[in-house]
Image (tube, rainbow, N blue to C red; front, top):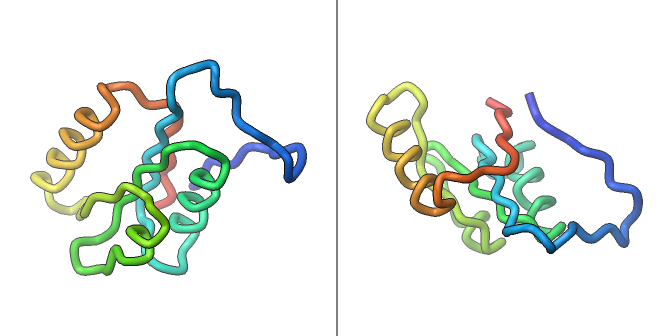
Length: 101
């Protein structure tokens, strides 16, 4: 499942009066919907936090300047490490969570 919201025009600019918008976007393998979502959120001035499988390359996210973290949802320690990383990065506050797995 992916969370989409309408963008009224190409000139859309997110409101900046609130704190930086942080959006975890799982499953951001190269060429997939997760990567497309993360890049679009970044283009809109939001702060996506991407995940990739430990066996996948993250070069496409690094190139785009997107924060990423390795995640294997079948390994409890990987999920716990992601939780800790996201809490440290965000101060425990998220604005949107995308589950596109």
